[in-house]
Image 1: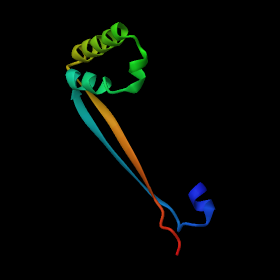
Image 2: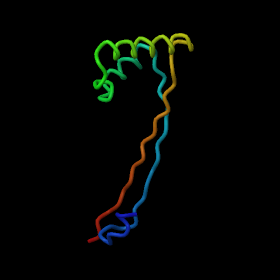
Image 3: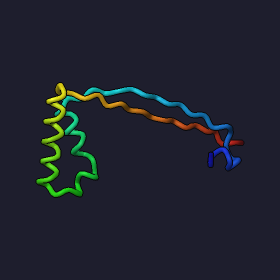
Length: 79
């Protein structure tokens, strides 16, 4: 809305792309280790969290499906 209201751009357009990724327990925990919010936990708590994550995923069949979505907004500058 702010882009359209600015008057400096042509009519904005958007595209949405959705897909899913299947990850093993190991892959998901490896990804989780990159989440900055987890670094506020003390190391022992953080490692317990990852162990529980891995255990739950393994008990649920060994992998999870993560839905992902990207929304792309495009607006040309008026000349």
